[in-house]
Image (cartoon, rainbow, N blue to C red; front, side, top):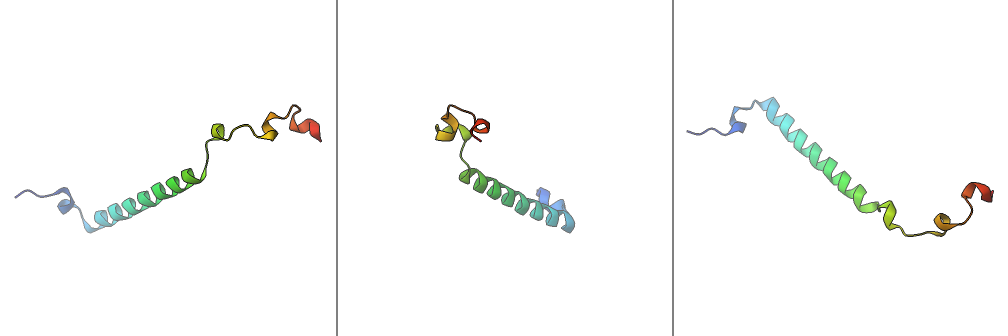
Length: 60
């Protein structure tokens, strides 16, 4: 009879694999959440601070 790969794994390997999958899902979720809240710097348009004629250090 054909045995699947997970049937050869010990209990510790199964626990490690389950924790790894949960960890990776959490990391992908965090990455998606951060990327959803962040905008690409080039898509902000021209703000007044960016297009001022004098640099910010000279305004002081």
